[in-house]
Length: 365
Image (cartoon, rainbow, N blue to C red; front, side, top):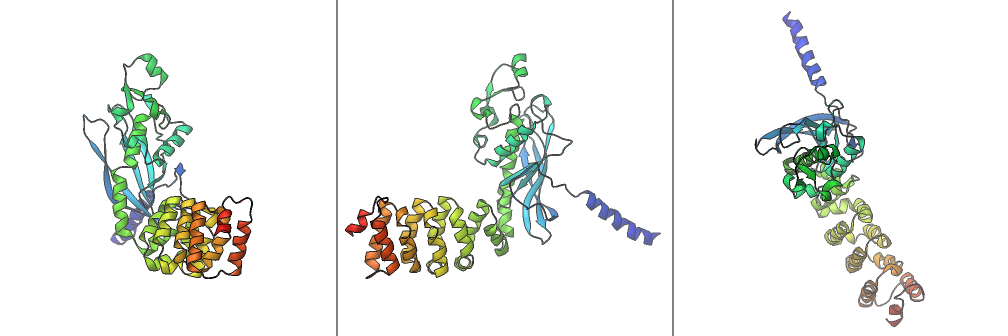
């Protein structure tokens, strides 16, 4: 009999773990395939969410779990949250499954089908309400960030006509006009509570936790992932050697990223990396596709680039502002006694162009 128990007990333990497996099926998810290969789900820390009803001054503790793939690589933070979303204690609990990326940025949520989110008078969220909530949660600089719940409600006497209009959210008053467009109608308490849970203490703890698991491999994942926040984070972690190792990917990011990140890349890229012929070609070939400030920085860094940069830029003179052209011509004059045939040809072509406003600068130089 005891021998039988040896096999039975592990079986039931195993089945218990199987039954505990979470169903990762978000209603909204702004990443791509990060959920496709999740095989490990481990609790890593807890965070507290304050109850809106300050008279009770209670806090609810929630688990944050780290989701990793079959290779043991971290991919997401996750929390299955159950919380009150009203100020008077007379409401249903909200149940929501929230996903954050590894930087602690919200990326999606799901619900338990049998436990829909609700708003005023316990009406269930409509399809468009769920979409509106997702859009709100994606906005880390929402008006909800800077306001107390009492700042968002007009204090008015409650009457049947107001209640029937469903402009109310609970019994405290009507939602102020300036935030009606960003929150679910009749669901201010739900929106406010969930936004502060998603962007509150949990997010700060995730940022701290990331530091404890950071590695070169994880940073490479960030750098090559198709997400701007990951790419920017990765760029800031790169040392000189890594900048050279990943120069091709950095050049690809440079082409498509925002102007601020382009500026960061051009200021950080080491001289001996930029001077590499392949790297120079990658960066300077992007000249016509980038913002004005980045073009200026590329011209300023001609002295650090491979000599082919001068020829590449000469092909794009028509994209230069007056100041950029003056800067480019000055560099040529101070650096080269004579110019190669290709550069001369491009300068002559641009100087004779009737479409280029600043062609006269080349004729006078």
